[in-house]
Length: 286
Image (cartoon, rainbow, N blue to C red; front, side, top):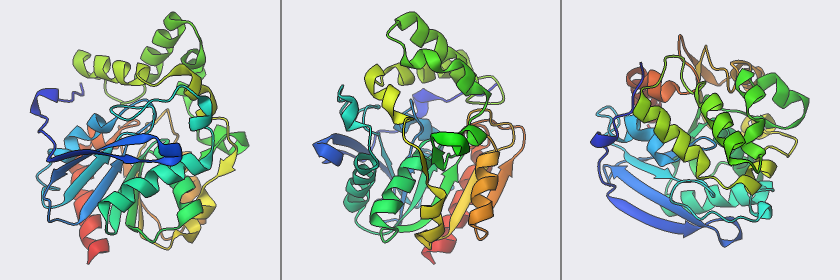
């Protein structure tokens, strides 16, 4: 059984906001060593910064300046109801730019799940001048179209209720998709937390967040920075095919496969994940 211990969360050293795309207020939290090199964490669709609990409390990463943030519509960030605030590449790119500008120096960026596509939006607009290295964590690298269907797993079959006006449909879909977050079952407290996180995201924006048709792999090809890919072999939300497809176009990318792990290698395989991230950060920062 997998569990997040929410009773062990430290208080952030820094809690602030920045203005992202279209002026949306983005919540940022900082942990770890304020003098350390920065490591940034971008969470998955329907979660928030607490999904990085095993990293912000990690001894292996304690020497780094750990920066989490909540995407628009999620967690502690502003939640516009207007779908136009979520519908374009520009808003997501501008959000990342605001966060990385706040960080103020080159960072290692971890992008979990759909954040892989949002980071691709950023690379497409701004390039990688603020980035030292990238860790794609069970991450998508396409949106919409036939390529996305090759990366989308069985969990999406029960996800249509997330876009319904019916709260009962939303609840059923939330429980269904969260069953795929891990290969091993979550304990009750973790499952309830993940369920609540997803329902915090307004319904109207959910309907446009998957609607674009774009292949972000080309932007990763041009990034020119080291890339680590951490992916669970048993991921049924973003299939292992996503990592394989990225590797085809970016041969220099390093892929770390986590056996018997689902959509959250930084949860189920957190000790190994943290060690590998620390090694990767030391290498890219020099």
